[in-house]
Image (spheres, rainbow, N blue to C red):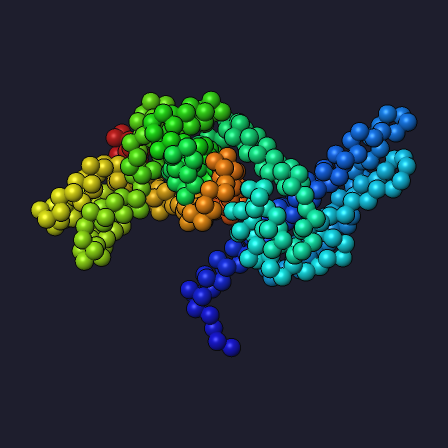
Length: 414
């Protein structure tokens, strides 16, 4: 048997994680849809009551759990039951999971589309037909509307939850633009991911903003502070002036780290394509340096190499010099996580590509709810920060130089 390479094993692991993510999303979506279906059935009997004044038709537990075999493995479902307290019996029949159904061959292709299209009532029907076949034609528009309402309610509750149970150390921020346009302005979702002292990342905020303006970011940060967000030690983001101005006002004690991915793209865009490969390598030499001193030297090399012919590129880099190298004042184990806004980019980076095809079929609120569901799903796969045991030291204000904790020597003992 041919032995797999390390790269192949890693690819297989990523594939397995994605498959599990899709399967989990399918299971949750089906549970929500079943809940919406049975709620619609109960609503049709809402005006009927027993002689004692109780509802005539009520929920009565669930059928035993069973698996639907799909292209990505089994997806567990549990169909609700109803009963009639008086008069003719009433049975709940799901359009999504009819009795004895065991196979949904096209589920693997349907789930990503459902997250995109499923927010819109008009698009849910064909999406669910892909998922369960022609049987979904029995799913009424009112059931779809109930499902949308559940997501809206989840989002509304989520954005009000308290944050003061944790001490928040780092935050990543970014504005995610989609292809959705409304009122002559593109939708920009302002996203904040935070890391608590246990090294766990959580989605903290997702709001509809206007061009990442200072006012929009101020509203997001004020709301987070009101919900109990502690002063973060460091914020990681791109060069958008709106956020940094708002941060200085609401959390003036938070240090700034510019995202190297955003900065690299911006610098390279100011250079000819023929020069970009070498310039990119030179930029990597800066942030890959083992110490701040070496990084400063590599910084100067880049400025001296490209400054004369391409002053726009070097000016773009130079203006954020201090903020680009701020990560050197934090534990070295944290550097890979602090240099970029990758937690946001990797989770929501494909939004603009997906929504570019929707041609306006989503509302602004619907778009936010879809992103919220994507974020919740991704949150379950985020790993704890490497070196998380250093986080209490960061909170305590212990100084780090070149990623190493600075200890003071007792002169008497010396």
